[in-house]
Amino acid sequence: MGYKKKYASKLTTAEEAVKLVQSGDWVDYGWCTGTPEALDEALAKRYEELHDVKIRGGILFTKPAVMQVPDTAEHFTWNSWHMSGVERKMIADGTAYYGPIRYSELPRFYPENVDSIRVAMFQVSSMDKDGFFSFGPNASHLMAACQKADHVVVEVNKNMPYCIGNETSKIHIDEVDYIVEGSNPSIHELPAGGEATEIDLAVARLITEEIPNGAALQLGIGGMPNAVGSMIAQSDLKDLGVHTEMYVDAFVDMANAGKINGNCKNIDQGKQVYAFGAGTQKLYDYIDNNPECFSASVDYTNDVRVISQLDNFMSINNAIDVDLFGQVNAESAGTKHISGAGGQLDFVMGAYLSKGGKSFICCSSTFKNKQGECVSRIRPTLSTGSIVTDTRANTHYLVTEFGKVNLKGASTWERAEKIISIAHPDFRDELIKEAEKMNIWRRSNKIK
Image (tube, rainbow, N blue to C red; front, side, top):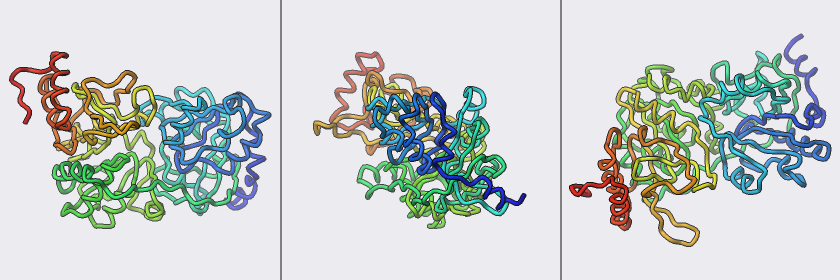
């Protein structure tokens, strides 16, 4: 049977496909821009007959229909591998929960720890001539989820970019049970953000001057990494490469400016490698059938052993706050969930193992709280309940608008001095007093 005939034989409606789901089942909704829409709406309509259906997914752009039904918690529970703003609100409502894990471990987690997935359902691209559906910019861990699922249902979206990559970036029609053709909604966009602030630019300058020609880059999400990307696009740097967890608009800007060719990469030469991507339509247009972009599962992109093979690897990520011991929190404000572990620690460790590599954790020195008060992001210790994303033993460079410091190997009093030196001046005396109480301040310390 030809692929077109197979396609026709497996084509069904969303309403028919979701009849596979029964009470008590685990269902996988895929990831990020691949989260199903027509299937989600159809499943939500069955809420009265379903109870305790547990759904896995992550990085939602909108609240799923299943999470908007009456008495939601009685019928559906959302389990997120990484938090978005939508999911933070769902946690506060008591209908969603975070699964703490290093993102890179997901492809191993599914075969070793998941007893069963009743149905894996997610959006894909149109089928190619060889019978494959691309996961779009969501290779991530989807192949592992599909291999564990009793049934795989794909929701075809003609607007989903076809992302070239390895065998984990697509699924063959023979591995699919049902095909649903959705309404072809536009792929959800992640705004690149407004104009970079003076603080963003100050941090970006401090990082950009550390980047050599031929470096391999990883950028996290947020204003500061984006500012670094924009600054690189306008710089004299050349022959840069990309090996990242998340592909963002800044990479498109750098590539269009002629800064990226990947010629100096020790592996995957000439390829921009990523586990998933989200951004504006500009990004989706750029990665669609682009042979220079390479989609791969997260256990490859975030593998410390892979990252370490790339010389001059530069990892650039955000933090919520950091303490005087060098512990970095990028996940919560106390017990309030903000993000997830993601792959930050993988890239911090991998960059340091790279020949000439460096990892940069960046943040503004202060922020305004809800009361309008100026609060230091550099704290004596992390607040109760805050998550240690990067341990003090792993933190390399820390950057604020007041400077950058290398914490690797620094003793407790040395790192306290260094960290306080890049805190906002208004908070330095107070931080010194706290450091003295914790016996990590020497009389000979001098703020430079």
